[in-house]
Image 1 (cartoon, rainbow, N blue to C red):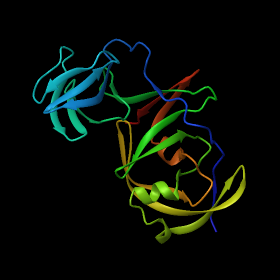
Image 2 (cartoon, one colour):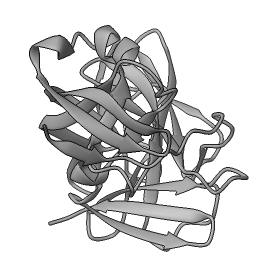
Image 3 (cartoon, rainbow, N blue to C red):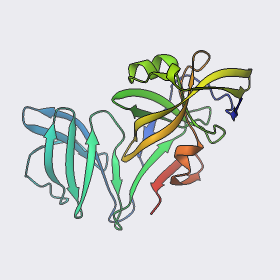
Image 4 (cartoon, rainbow, N blue to C red):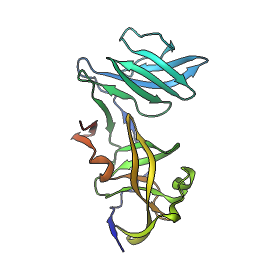
Length: 218
């Protein structure tokens, strides 16, 4: 039976603070914060939300290309970026890189919301977890038939527990989307998802004090 390493990182969801600091020159951060009819409500660099019609462009040069329900596609510096209502802003720097910046809660944990298929699940960034890990209830909401996966064991601070290894069709974390991601499903004892190293290894990760920046590897 395969053993997975998964440290206990369970804390209340107190703090996900997205990019409240000043951005470097030529960096732009875009968030979809709402919609009014056929117009999107965007926040640029954490500023006052503005409304924008499809095809229109902001003074920062951001053009709204598509608005479909709680999703939008914008063009920033010649690059298309996909936004979803209620998720983290997409940051685009002068080189066109996609990145997200998180701030730690008082316990030093970095939280985010991740789309598992189409289900929104709270996650903690956990470099001690081998795999993306989530509770069975969240897996069920995401339409994952986890009991058809491979049964395994995971080593946690509470001891060895049973898990199911499955492939998740789609994982979206801020501006990053991954397909066919291996995950460990916990039937009990996991109050918050763990964003493990099989996802984090695909990103450049830099921590400076209470700030963590994740950027796509190219």
